[in-house]
Image (cartoon, rainbow, N blue to C red; front, top):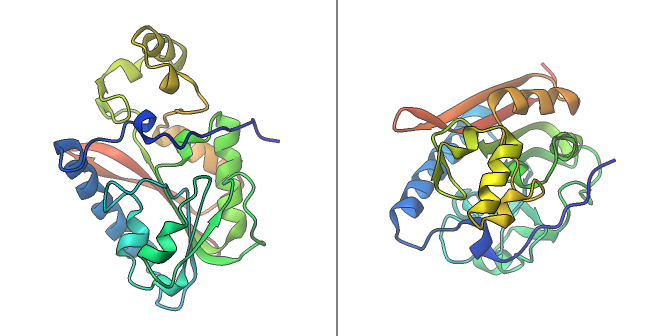
Length: 233
């Protein structure tokens, strides 16, 4: 059982920075680094089928759906998300888009060699939903998964661009956000930040083995966590 999830398609609420801004340039660099880590850690072959869960309908940035933009074998790529991102099929010929809820994917067990998801798990709601999310990715993966999420312990919270306040206990953090008029991100359903420990625990609770948690850093501080897991030996 999972909690109800209602994500918004209003990108202004997700803290997206303007094209060309410093935060956008930094985000692109970090996404490029995570993309290369995906290629290096799972080493997908040209014939492997890949599912990317949680694509966005945002068209303002050329890296908003970075796997679709940068992965060379488009015909092996399926993108899934709640938002209508069907335009990706025209933008990147050969790939396929499926509108779907990440907590109940419309794919059979072991449908894809690898499942990729970037910065989605912090937006699916409660810890129970986060465990269910990972369990669902693991179910449809034949060989492994690669999941990224911002590190809660990075000094700047990426969505609100507020320093340190997210170090408070979650209830206190949400109360501060409400006082600042950030009601959207004060709702656990829209933002539930994770640490190495909570990400590893969600994986274990989701029945995932052979897990390792890595990170990419910004200014020497781990900014984004990477959950990498393979099936089998």
